[in-house]
Length: 194
Image 1 (cartoon, rainbow, N blue to C red):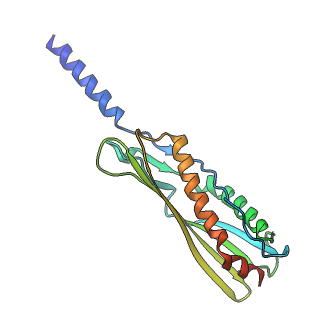
Image 2: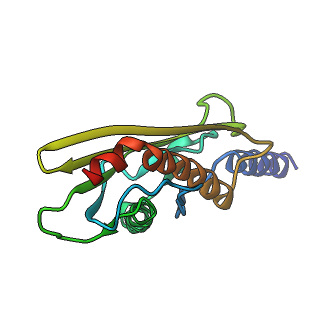
Image 3: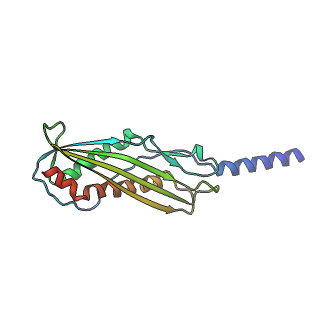
């Protein structure tokens, strides 16, 4: 009888601990330019490049009892084509024509410099997360150069640990905001049009 009771207690404790663990999530965010951009170009060609400047595809962990097993990641292979499409769309909205390998054309390089997801380290349950994204834009037009950094952050509180769909939306929103800030910088359009 005591053996069964002990086995039952071990089973309950094991299930409780497993419930505090979170599985890893690989997100596929959909960044989008939000809001209108002011056209300053007249269709001039611009070479648009995107790069992943992060040291790792891992954004952070979801916390919980075993945070080392709950990594959140976004791969460069997933995010770079989406960023390229959005950067080219933004350049068109600014009045320019994205043209790969155009000779002697101005160049815009957009680098995803940082993408982080941080949950509090203490506690068994994830109750909040801080998400940050930073882009670096480098413009080169003949001998003139310009660099700018554009960031966005979000602190989100939860009643229960967020699922993959929720985290994907949150990361998408933060990326979209930072991306939009970059292309709303009037100096980028001015540098490209000179």
